[in-house]
Image 1: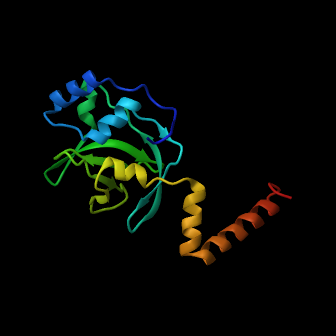
Image 2: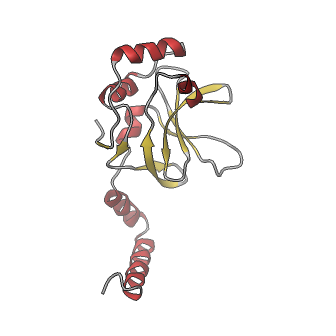
Length: 167
């Protein structure tokens, strides 16, 4: 299971059953397992890949609530229903399809004019497995574009010296 900082209190299996009953749909088993472990929180390794966009930084997995506002956590897009499960540091949403038992994960970039969704993974488990630490992400970028990383690090070092942050 993914490590979380600021984890919310786990949700009970009976509460999960009530949510599914109210929803009229079953949540994917891997997502229910996550919620029964921790009802949301901030992941320690919080960088995830967005196809054709690079990496994004996850802000928080949202807790699922047994309140009327819970139903405000849904997005209907192209006749499919999605549950808002998280957001990134820019406020973009991570959505889970709840049209079937797989629970495919999508990314909604709020800056895109076409309002299209980008598929991130086939399941919640696959999405969790894609997370990296900042060090792992930097190393991946370094392998793909070593000259870009080295140029950035040189500029950062120069800035730190000139601003007095580093001597």
